[in-house]
Length: 315
Image 1: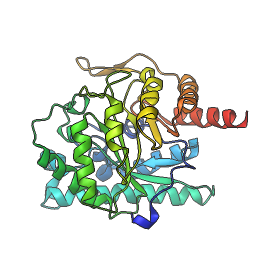
Image 2: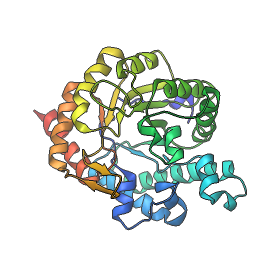
Image 3: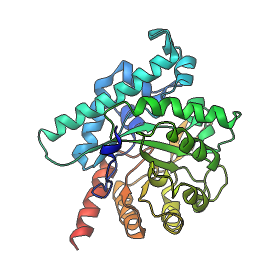
Image 4: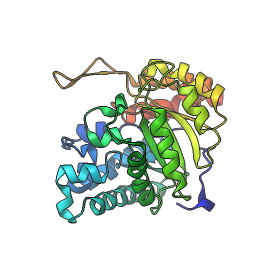
């Protein structure tokens, strides 16, 4: 990841869908603090297969299976014993996740000659706590420590073959500020910041999304701004607020719209890939340049997005 290779997002339109969702459907165990990152060690071939399934469905961009990776998570999960150091274990996992995405891209491009972008996925601090804190952002941590948390992983991601970093599911303006400060410590780290939102106006912690986007609008290392892991019914409204607050490309990849029953530990409701594709067409019309899916979306959702966007572009 070098300044000279700063990615141009203009040809990118379709993002992939949920990684953990697909791994679980394929029988992988994603329990524990490392979530889908656990599969990086246990069954890396499954991760590469998921990447390929999204490319075959029409994704222009795949995000690595590193969302949950951090020294904090590796230390708590006991995986640090593999390298005797949680920081080394987490760094190795980030590199491994990018290598798998690069391998999938090479295999795909042997058959189909079209550009494919790789984003190094990095979740918020709350994801490392694996207690749902990313959906409220009320962390018991100081700002300087939050900057260090992000800077450490950005340093690793910037030294991989990823085209950019995707800082995902950011719940608050404070964490966005910490990400920007961490990026400034690593000038070769370019990427997008996407927020998780509680409704059609505010991020999970309560700040207005428009104010968060305005904060990022002049930051040269932030290449796009968006929302992810948010209910799809809020996305059109959120795009409108982003358009009025930033000149940067807008990326949206909400969840399927299903609900999580924490007491019974199961998903409730239904999701239609065809309806998701229809909504994606609406999001593009509203101003989003890059669309995809998050939790509980799969290749069928991405295929529906691709088909709808191709049909719309041909009209």
